[in-house]
Length: 423
Image (cartoon, rainbow, N blue to C red):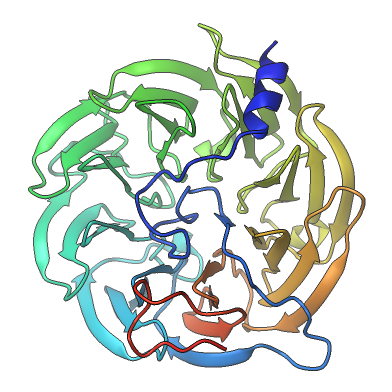
């Protein structure tokens, strides 16, 4: 049975999807694009003090998350008709270089237009703007290597709220959605920008392409149609499962469980555990009780944690929940985080509320167990997940405040900047 194969998969350790130290966070969602850090040593006891603020910056409006690789951290923000990609020394916050480009902000874009997160691979940085400009840069100095435009070069169709996906870098390829009728998913040579393949005809969603865990040569896309599996080498479509929502908003990352994939969307659609081993994928269960609009689900063992709710004046009714994956059964829920986001660091949940408060909690299915709570950011509509790498927690607000907290031990030598020090 598919569920028994899923249980066997959970017993195995999942190999990283990219060849990079696990203490770095090279792309949206971390090394395995699952919003999980396997780094040890994050401190959770903050009863008598709060984490040290290492540094803070104003980076412009938007929802781009932070990536950190080899002692450098990157994000982008919008201001005065331009997007700015910023590279800083991760230990000190010193700005090392910037890359600016013109980019309009449409009324639908809430606090700001910048939403795509850069991806770092083999010294290259790859960035997809919400308007459709694509840049390949030298991650060390910001030099432009090559550029594309998703509308002009590929006939792309921009989603209503702009392109939001973070490029997938794997096997010398950079893969992203264009939403084009002829070739909605595109793979380019990462070094030259030359087209390798294009496939599919569905409109782009707001999720990011990801490599399958434990399945050779397959990638997953969660677009406006639903869940699509493609062959990595040539883009050939392998399987599809329909999961449509109002406004075409599929924005969370699929949770790859081996033979099954857990997906979730808001607007009354909810979650589905999809059996991908069948020639025609089907849902093992479906439920409207786990409708995640912003926050991707994270997994610990047989259980997943997420935030159910959606925008539109009912953010205060959103709930953090624990889900027993195999049965589609809720174990517990907890209000008070709004449409926040969460990541899993080792054994603990890091929840960033939409009002900028961090809560640390045990990732267990017995009940909500809070460990610490402290205010980090101001404002509202803070929908960008935090990043944890090398003992540093990066948080950025929708209005552009980027704050770096010291919450654990720094990385070992060789993967951190020369001026980083351990606590």
